[in-house]
Amino acid sequence: MSSVLITGCSTGFGRDTALHFLEGGWNVIATMRNPAASSLPISDRMRILPLDVTVAESVAAAVAEAGPIDVLVNNAGIGWLNAIEGTPMETVRGIFEANLFGTIAMMQAVLPGMRERRAGTIVNISSSSTYKPLPLLSVYRASKAAMTALTESAALELAQFGIKARVVVPGMAPSTSFASTAQGHIMEAGGFPAPYAEFAKQTMAMMQSAEAGPVTSAQDVAEAIFRAATDPNCPTVLPAGEDAIAWAVGR
Image (cartoon, rainbow, N blue to C red; front, side, top):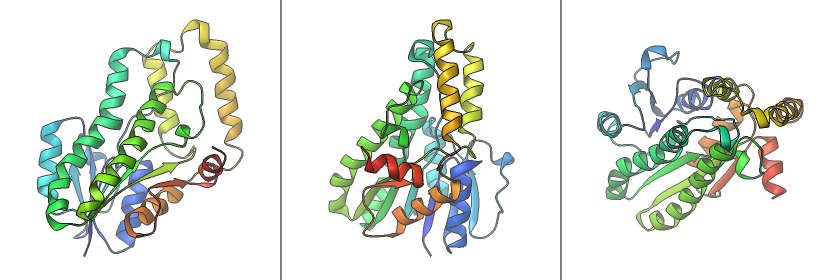
């Protein structure tokens, strides 16, 4: 029976993806920083492990305890919404640590085993903001665009070992915790910089009105991740959700 390790499973895409793989008959290793907060059902096919992708020791311990992994899904990350002028460099580094460097660390941890078995798939989660420039997402978008570029190049160098690397690009998903988390970060940073306040107000209103149109559900993303993990003919870059697909076509 195949095994999948998924990062960032406490809520949203990660949680729904873990359940989707479980329903598909897989052994699931669902990871998160605080397993005590998990609402996932624990069983002989669903293990929950602590993992902070920004801490090397945590990555090594989780991968060692998980055992052989057929599929790695790098879903853990941080959402951020603010002007670049209002984003402290400490915050910039933290976003890249979680969204990009943590992904690289997880890939490096599982690749030796996949290479020895000459099989495996890595699925990284990007963002449809990489398809379409959006204001107040500059730092977040940069971290996700880097993830797409990372995956595309990795796919070429790993193919010789029978390993696939793919990136799923979700659209806007108001049902996830991204918006509330980003809003919380804005408050922690003292709000938007004063010169950007009116522009930010207009931008937030625009984003809220966009949610009245086609949006992406967590189930859309879970299904796309499952396809990326199981379909040999899946493209390297796979948009998830009606809005993401439309943006991808319109690039």
